[in-house]
Length: 372
Image (tube, rainbow, N blue to C red; front, side, top):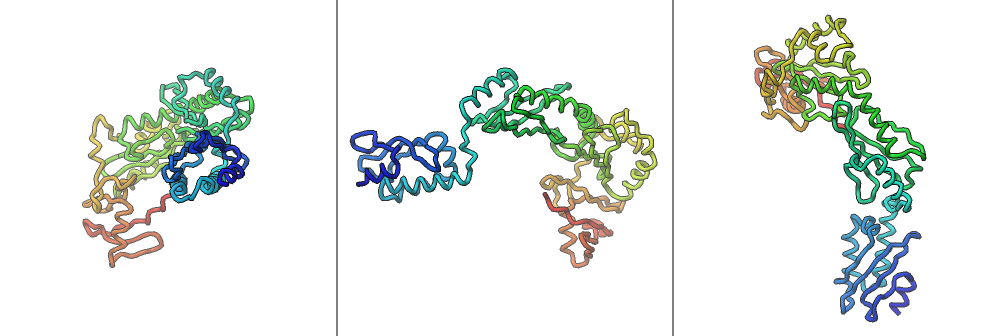
C-alpha cells in the first residue's frame, strides 16, 4: 500500500534494491525535476535516513536544511516525508525562482570561448555557478582595478550587471553580439578617462596627511586634509574636471578658520586649472600643508575630549571649542549627547547651545545627520 502511494505521489522515485531501503530518481515540483537519493537504515526508520541531493537542490535548500531534518525526524513514513519535502521545495522555489534558471550548455561553451579570447590571466575569480566574474585591469599608471561582471542565464542575449570601484556610473554598452573582451575594453576606456582624477588624489594622499577617509578607495572623491592642529580642509574633487576648484569646507575653531576662509575668497582668482589641486590650494590659502616627510600624524590625531578616542566608528573629532586658549576637539555625536544632557543647555531646532566641557566657554553643535 505504501509502495503504491509512493509511486502515485512520486512516480520517478523508485526503489533501487530488493529490501527497498535505497530509493533514487527524481522529485517533480512546479514542473521541475530534482534528482534525489534516499538511504534508509535496515529498520526503515526515517530518523536515521540519509538524503542525497543534486547540486541544484542543495543550492535551493540553503536556509531550509533544518526544516528538512526536522521533517525526517517526525514523519511517520517515507510517503509522508516526500509530501512534506515537496511542500518545502515549493516554498523555497517561490522564495528564489531565479536561482534555478540553469543556463543551457551553450552558455558555458560561450563563456569559455570569450575567456580564451580575453585571456585567462585577466580572470581573478569566478563563482561555482559560473555567473559572477571578477576581471582585473591595469590603468596607464599601473594602478590595479577590478571589474565585477554578473552574467544572466541568457548570456549574451541579456546584458550583464557590471560594477567597479570607480567614482562615476559604470554605463556599459551591450548588444547580443557583445563579448567580455569588448566589455573589458570599455572598462579600460573608463579607467583612462579617470587617470587625471586619480593622479590628483594620489598626490594629495602621498604629500599630505589625509584625516578622512581613513582608507580611501578608488571611488572616493572626498579628502579631509590636515592644515594644523584641529584645523583641516575638506575637498570634494570632480572626477570629470579634477583640476577645477573643488567644493571645499574649512573645519576647525572659528578664530583659525576665519583668516583661511578670507584668503580663500580673496585669492580664488589665482586658481590655475593647469596646476594640481594641491598646488592651487597652497597658493590660494597661502600655506604649506604638513606632509608625512615633515610631520607625524599624531600631531593632528587629537582624541575627543569626551570619549578620549580619536575615531568613533568612522568619525573623527571635528567640533572644536572656539576659545583660543582651549581649542579642545570633540566628536559631533559626543558633544551633542553631552550638551543635550546638561540642564543649562538650550535647544533651537537641531542645534544645541551650551558650555564647553573643558573651559565652560559657549559652544554649539548641530545634531548629527542620520546615517543613510
